[in-house]
Image (cartoon, rainbow, N blue to C red; front, top):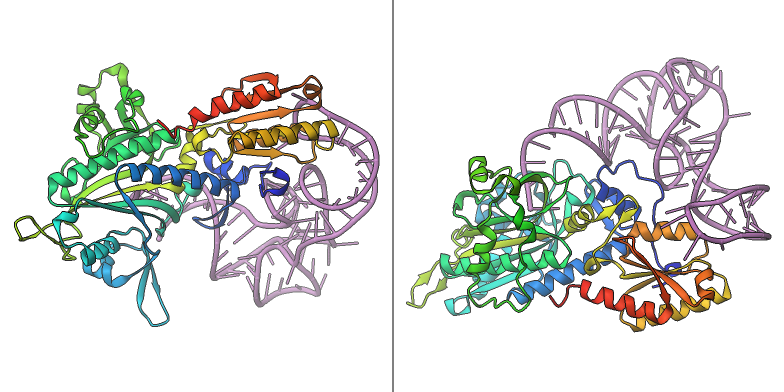
Amino acid sequence: MRLSSYFLPVLKEVPKEAEIVSHRLMLRAGLIRQQAAGLYAWLPLGYKVLRKIQDIIEQEQARAGAIEMLMPTLQSADLWRESGRYDAYGKEMLRITDRHERDLLYGPTNEEVITDIFRTFVKSYKELPLNLYHIQWKFRDEIRPRFGTMRSREFLMKDAYSFDLGMEEARKSYYRMFVAYLRTYYRMGLTAIPMKAETGPIGGDLSHEFIVLADTGESGVFCHADLLDMPIPAANTDFNGDLTPIIDQWTSLYAATEDMIDMAEFEKTVPEPKRIAARGIEVGQVFYFGTKYTGPMGATVTGPDGQEAEVHCGSYGIGLTRLVPAIIEASHDDDGIVWPVSVAPFEVMLLNLKSGDAECDAACEDLYGKLKAAGLDVLYDDREGGAGAKFATADLIGVPYQLIAGPRGIKAGEVEIKNRKTGARDTMGFDAAIAFLKAAIEPERRDKV
RNA sequence: CGGGGCAUAGCUCAGUCUGGUAGAGCACUGGUUUUGGGAACCAGGGGUCGUAAGUUCGAAUCUUGCUGCCCCGACCA
């Protein structure tokens, strides 16, 4: 993509409404634009990041056996009356009346709809286990939206729903999502730690929040330091096999949010030098809730014995529009965003330091073509303008590698590569630079791990 | 929902206290010169000062209502 024909409205000055660093950087780097309280337009660069996050989630959901579909944003109130949640859900739920005076709502979650679909079509235990998910916009009329898309009213969320015959089968479905989540966050360049979460009226041990450590996190968290270096399950993990050893490994070390912390147990089971007390951002939650919806909504299947059997469910959420600021909180510096390659809007930014100079332009056109031919996603800054502004923009938007081509180096047949994260600079010939970037970027995509 | 604050050009803000012709920097347009860390100069364009009413000879400025947005708290993926 040529920057001269792209749409990238970067801001030099800090918008006054933005308090935390990710919100400031998302506005400054031209990722989002606020349209009203808690409502954001995703500008091209931001939308590209969102799409990359979505791709990773879809790949890992598929690997774990979940099947993608799409449910509407607006739902009928009738379904919610059936589950008993229409009145139970507070003012967070946006209620709408259509021209026929029918009660609708903008879905804050989708248990009712998915359970309705399930009960319509699934009649036999032989069709289980089943895990259906979608990635769709939700709305929760937060009392106080804040921190940009970290806590917006409209947000994009992946929500998966598992259906199983009995608790033990449901546990296996839960484990599959648990492992998928570990892989999903890792691929985005995040270290997300599963922590015990409230299980609500059902009880049991089957709910975890996945937390990314960050100073600006909304909740206090406590965990064992070794969780930060725990090995991530490999791509060839057998999701139909026994995942218990992986789960045991991850849940054997203490980790809990401030709502769930048992300080005595924390101090007893975690040696003092290994204790981490920090702040964190919740980027996902997995939850087993049994027959909470299938019961009242009459979703049952015929079991192996020919009798009607209960269906046990879980739900598994990932907030995509929250992940973008979470990644930025975890990866930025004073100059701007530092994207991990796997979610970066572009992998390389080619900086032509002297647009309009025949020699410089020709060399950059050649490099641009070669970068694309090498399969790299490149943003070419071909605009007129000073070098300083180009460096500043490149650093701000956080593209992982900068290929810097100026008249000085080009005369010598050389270009410079800057690693945005480390700041390391290497000077080399054109073809060597292409090879260098290809070799550096491909493994960092983390799409084969 | 309780408490606090803000609303003037695309952005950051001055002007409001003490009423008297709408301002700066950046951004934008045209031109000239520049070119390795947010360039310089010249010439321009752009605002019914959030909105409605009131006070006044006269309101960005004073009064009141309304709306929007931000921050703290309670709530939340």
